[in-house]
Length: 493
Image 1 (tube, rainbow, N blue to C red):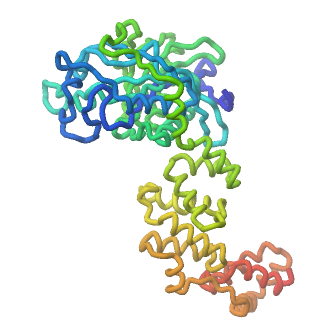
Image 2 (image 1 turned 60 degrees about the vertical axis):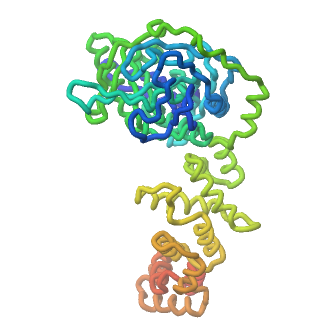
Image 3 (image 1 turned 90 degrees about the horizontal axis):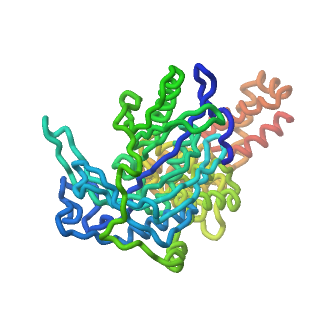
């Protein structure tokens, strides 16, 4: 594992401690029907309106595997560079809860559909590290218990019951809350590129169980606690930081960590006990007698592999090599598939000759993303389309408008829309390239500031002040390059 070594230790009263983190990500499979029934998976329906007789566990009902969910699991495994197991088995995991009508969950235990893989993760400061994937298995979701509708009774909504989940289990390769947050963000990005999960954490379509333990650096692994169902990247970071500190304090006070399941309270920023942690034997796993082993061949996997989209890592590599972008800029652009597509549309939309990719990246990241973030919009609801932004870059490249005019034009496009060329023409926003007109402004500024002229002769950097004044006088329309050259000639620099 690269890039994770130094300065990740937490300070305690007895010295340094290392936090060890493993994650179990539950990702709802993007499919129209559930894993073993034809009931709808649409979000937000009235309680218990998307429930088949299978989901309600009516006597004699038999599960039938949804092939699309199997395909989505294989696609995800391929995206995680993982071993695809051509034979896997569905097991019954027995536990009893009001929103689990069967009294067991159909899951996979010893023989999952996807085996070991890895994810390469980027950290904000430029380091990268690899996180091992232990396995990916398919399982059905439980329903939802609602406790606040009645003073003494719990209501049960089975709309989620039987919805397909992929449980993606990482190896304990993470060493800080920042690494864990970066890992979840990268995994979410891969799933969204693949189209196998929409990654909507607010709806519970992607949620994480976080296993946290602490140890002295290089020492044996400590006892872990599992924080269940954390549903935002920010909360994952807060839960890890609090839980690691809690464990260090318990151990340093002479106590021992109990292996248990905990919940994170986002309002208080603390974890609290939920129940003692079950072991695998507590669930009494056994192969589901109603389902044959899941089997497919190499040709089946290869056909799915051929249709995979370009994933974030490959796209980032192409953006740096083909477009000459920095690793940071490429990383920002490929984080979401829609933003990468938008950028490519800006670059390649200029006809036979591609536009300047670095200039395009600068405008997309700084101007467009900055404005979208400020107004709480995403790229899908951007008032400025890729074709419009591309036309702005063309006008800059032709020398028709300056960078400053371009920013004014962007504001008009954002508020009113329209064709950039028409706006420049009808509103007289064209850059002044007429040297005689620019010379007049330069002469005026020089004549009015003799003291600054003397300063510029001894301090050539002072020319920047003159450029600013001339641009101001021209209403930002003068060609900055022409202004610079005329000033240098007139000031003898």
